[in-house]
Length: 148
Image 1 (cartoon, rainbow, N blue to C red):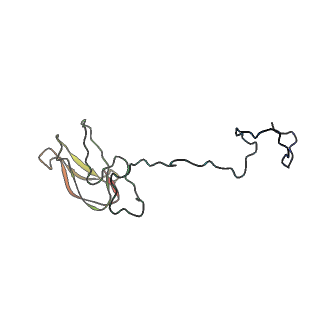
Image 2: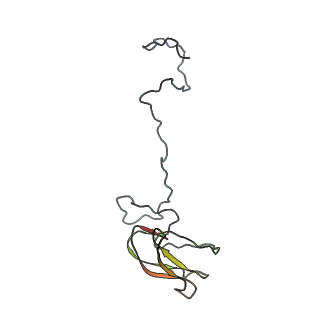
Image 3: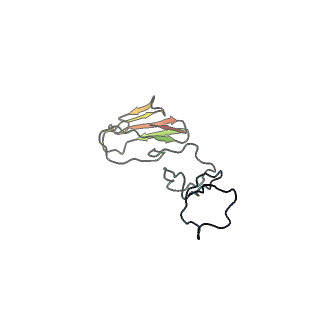
């Protein structure tokens, strides 16, 4: 318990035989508290690293990281389909002509490509290859944008 009449100078003779081993809060906070040292990653990343390192990596970080579950050029999606439209983001890293295709699909498909805000349809096809699969060929897309 605190003294009824505290002194301004420290006590020469301690009142306990050993120092206390259990930290106890002070009644008056210090002006310069000691902060705990963080361990581990403070802000872990949620996007997995690239599968293989690049031959010529950039010196600066990516200005606009690719969100999770977003396609990049050369990516392929496989899986079960339940007759519900799929909205798949596509990250166009640089300005280029791009082809989207479902020609390898085993069922009837349709493709639509929308701008970054999903307000303007850029392309649409339902018979581009073999009559039932779709293909959008040489669509000119601006870089640093995510299309759907």
